[in-house]
Length: 240
Image (cartoon, rainbow, N blue to C red):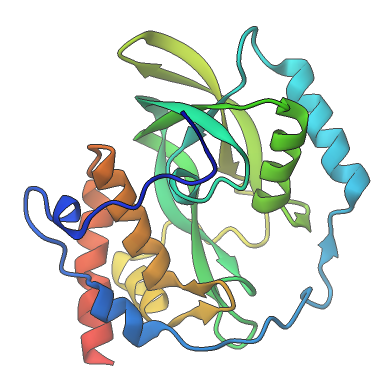
């Protein structure tokens, strides 16, 4: 089935195996109108030629067959490109982490936010989708969503993933630890404090975490670290 976003999971689905502490009411307390300040001064933003170059490099290195995309976070519900199908897989050697700072979108220069990427170590359950035709156009739309600044902190990489049908290669986005915006492994309480307070014109960090967990749950995936984090974020919002 072709789609541009995943179906919205029910609140009952999000409670499977024990309800989330973080709720829609908590998220609502973090949201407010934030004007987009536009490109951050001092940052070098990508231009059309950059996206075309990276798109062509990805296509040249792609394995035979449909181009597969590994989704582990917001790509589950907002891929910015038309995708189809869906198979649960595991990417060994990578894990989800709120590991790079953002001064826009879900944060501001005055109160930076944190965004999630794949970082080295462990393993990550996610979904593999096929990027629909026209592949080049859909891939470029995806790149424009995931990458805005040079050097990019969230970089495309061919990952080895395994599902019920066996091993395959899928395109994923992983963090570049050499990037100045990479913050490494922060204490979970510090991450929770940031997600509970940071907000930008796309929404808040708490909202991003909430939607990620709900959509993972709808796919039958529970990330233990995110589950612990959401309880801490709810606690921080209540304390604030």
